[in-house]
Length: 478
Image (cartoon, rainbow, N blue to C red; front, top):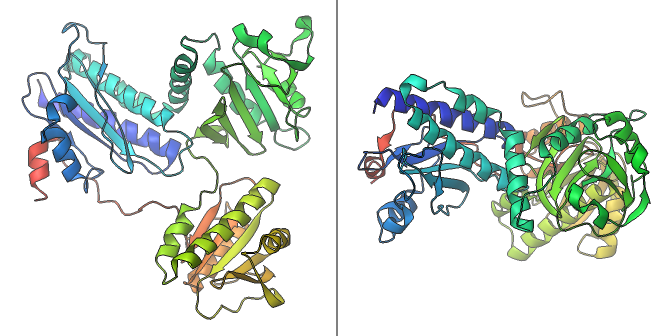
C-alpha cells in the first residue's frame, strides 16, 4: 500500500481528532497503535509523546503472555469494509483508549488524555470509536478515493459524540432504541441556554421523555393536546422554564412539544437539560453526560473537585492530618458557595508566619474544624473580599483585599476577583487562592497562574510524519 497515502490518512485523522477533543475537553493529545492488512508488525504514531512513560504497560500488553488475546484476528467478511469488531481496551492511568479490527485494518487502538474533570468518558470514547471507523474506511477506499474529510469531521464531532453516547446508553438501559430525535433536542438545549428572559439566563430542568413513555409521567399540570408549545419555539420554552425555576418541578417534553410540569419519578429513560444560568448540565437519568455554556457543549463537570488543591498541599511540609483538614475546609467552603450560587475567594496561606493581608481581622481566629464556625465562615464569604485561612486551620480575617502589580497572565475577559488573585499569588508564592465564580468553574491559582491539575509540560510534537514500528519505538527508551 502507498506509504504516503497511509501517512496522510493517519495525520489527517489524528490531528482532526486531537483538535476536536481539545475544543471539547481542553488541551488534548492523541496517538494510535495499528497494523494494516499485509503488515506483519504493529506500528505506532505518537507525535505528541502521549504514550511515553507507559512503555512497560505497552510491552506487556502487546508482547507479553496475553498478547494473542489482546490482539485478536478479524473474524468477519474480508470483503465487508464497514464492519468493525471491538478489541480489548487498554487500562492505562490518565488515558482513554478504544480499538477495533476490520478487513482493511486488522488492528488499531486510539488513545487520548483522560482529563480529571470529565463529566463522563462516554462522549470521548464515542469520538475514539468513530476515529476507528473513519481510519478503516479511508484505508479501504485507498488513495484514489481519499477526500481528507475524516479529520475535518472529527474536528467538529462534539454534538455527534454526545448523540452517539445517548443512543448507546438508550439501548443499554432499555434494550432498544428510542423514538427521541436527539439532534434537534441537542440543538434546542443550546438555543434555550442562550435565550434571556428579562435579561436573565434560564434556570430549571427541562426533561425529555421518549414519546412512547410520555403517558407514564405523572403530571402536576398537563397542557391540552391541541395547544402544546413546540420545542423549537425557544423563546416560549424559555418563558415556561420560569415556572419550574427554584423548585424540584420539571418541564416535560417528548422532543417535539412541551407537555406539562411534573415532580414525580420519571420513566426508565430520560434526558435532562439542567439550566443554571450561564451554564448547565446534560444528564441521562441521573448520570452526567457533559456540560454546556457559551453556546457549546464541553466535557467538563464544572464542579469543584479541587484535586489541584490536594496536589498542592502534598508539596508542603504538613502533617497528614493537617493536610486532610485543610483540604476538607476548603472543599466545604467552596461547595457551600456553589450551592448558594454566589462568588467568593478563599486564601489558603501556607506560610509558617501568616502573611499580612488587609481585611477585617478577627481578634481570635476561629477554628474551621468546628462545624458551627465553618458555617459562620460560609456566611463571611458572602461579604466582598477574600477569606484568609492559614495552615493552623483557622480563619484569621475576611473581606480581605488582594493587591499586587500587573502581570502578563491576566485575563481581561475575567473579573476583578480572578485577576486580583493572579496578582496576589504572583507576589506571595506560599499562598493558594481559590476563586469561586457564579457562572464559571472554580479556579485554583498559585504563583500568578491557574493550576488545572494536569501536567502542562508536553514534549514538542514529533515533526516526523511517518509512524514507527512499535518494537523500535519501545527499544528507543531502553
